Image 1 (cartoon, helix red, strand yellow):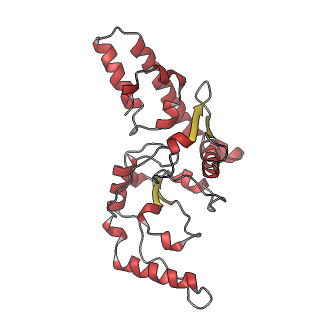
Image 2 (tube, rainbow, N blue to C red):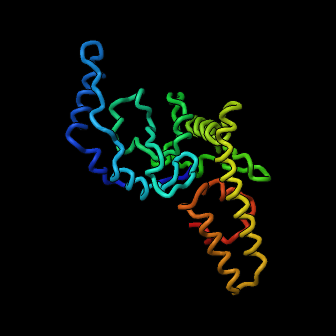
Image 3 (cartoon, rainbow, N blue to C red):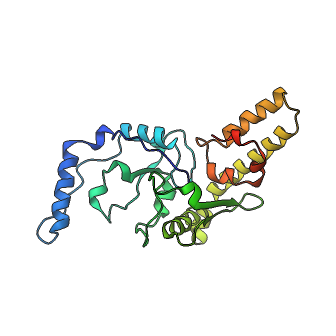
Length: 242
């Protein structure tokens, strides 16, 4: 999970009059559910301008697993605060995130007590408040709260573990392709580090390996935080990280 900077400009498709009317009616329903009928969603929130904004803000990555795609059109639109918890946020730009489809499907539909860390919120630093690690062979991602008193961080770590490793036999098998992709990235990084260290300073080969490592560890690349947690990465120059 990575800190992201969301675009401040709200996509035009989320500012249509029928959406504003829906939100107004939903607030009325929320204040008096016994006498006012629950309004129906007027239109879809899945529009190209929103998905293009996702590409720019989230680098075409699932905000939860950091799995990278060609573009955000492949992913689901996930509600940070679930629709069943607050209907007024269904079209709220700051509540919408790109998520890989299966990840979106197995994320619980109820927010736990204390909530989750929000990777776009200034007060939540998911890069410092979560400790990321891979097993020796890169197969099993693990997530730990850097502070045992941080309930949001602990909830987020439990969520990330569920999404990466499943919560029963079926979901463990269903998340295997994600772990395989992470393991492949792990091996690519280790091979590139070996390549980098095996060539003399100033050589074309060393320069190329440095560039490859920089790309593999970039914020725009897949699984950034898990990749940067690999112990061998800490031995490379700090200026390799963007």
